[in-house]
Length: 369
Image 1 (cartoon, helix red, strand yellow):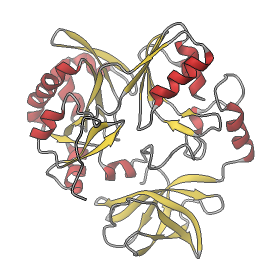
Image 2 (cartoon, helix red, strand yellow):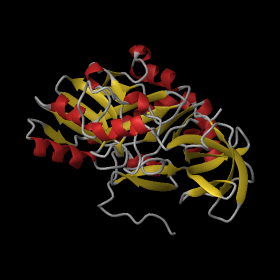
Image 3 (tube, one colour):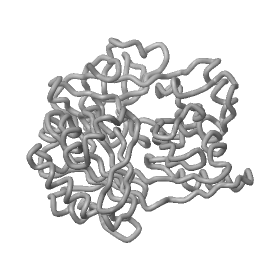
C-alpha cells in the first residue's frame, strides 16, 4: 500500500497542522477523522519513552456525542447496562453501549456535565446516529449532536507535573476518571484524568477548534523540560495493559460479559435498558468465551492485520485480535477471545500467524504481567 489517500471525507483535526510539523509518519482513520499512528521513533522507542516521560497525543477522533434536554438521562440509560444514576457531575464513566441483542455498539467514556447534559467520548462507531434514532423512535425530548470538542491527551508519568505547571496545582486534586476545569486564553476548558494508556495522564476536551494550534503550542513549550514528544496510542503498551480497541477486540458480534465488562452491567432488573433481556439470558447460560492475554515464542511477530487462529492441538479455541512484540518481556504478546474449556490462565496453545509461522505460547491474565 502507498498510504492513506486524503480527501475531505477524512476530517483533519485542530491539531493536524502541528502533528505534521512534528514529523508524523502515518495516520489511521477513526470516526471519519485522522488519528496519528507513528512518528519518527520505532514503536519500541515510543513505548519506552511513554513509560518514562510524557507525550502529547492528538486524539480528536474521540468525537463527543452530546445528549442534552429533559430526557437526556433517560436516553443515556436506555443505551447502557451500567447504572448511570450513580454518576455525579464531575464523573467520567466508562460504559458499554449495547443493542437489543446485547451486542456491543461502542465502549465510550461518559462525562456527566449536568443532570440533563452528557458527553459520550466514543470509540470507532456511529453512536451519534444510534442515539438520534432511539430518541426519535421513543419520542424523547432531547437534543443529540456532535459539539466542537477535540480531545488532546497528555500521557506518561511526567504528565501531572507538566499539566500542573501549565494550568495550576489544582490539577493534582482531580481524581482518576474525574474531570475539572482550566482557563485557557479566556475560555473555560474541561480536563479529565484519563487516557488510552496505563501510564497516567490527562485529556483536555478542547471546546473550540480555532484554539487547537494555540493549545498544542502551549503544551509543547511547557513540556520541553519534561522531555515531551509527540506520540499516539502505543500498541505494545495497550496490549500489555489489557486495553481493548473497538473494531479489533470487540464488535456487535460480542457482548460485554465475554469481553470482561460484567462489572459495568446491572443484571438484577433494577434498571431498564435496551438489550436487558438478552444480556440476562447470556448471564444465566454463561458466556462461551472470555478475553485473555497471550504470550508466545518466536522472533518479533508481524502486524496482526487479520485474526490469527489460536489452537489447542488440532482444535481452534480462539483467535488473536491484536498482537505485537514486547521489548519488556522479550516475547510476543496478544489479546484473544478463548472458548470455554480452554480459557484457563496458563493453558498451552499454538498461534498460527498470517505469514505462515507457528509459535507455542500460553494464556495470560490481563493486564499481562
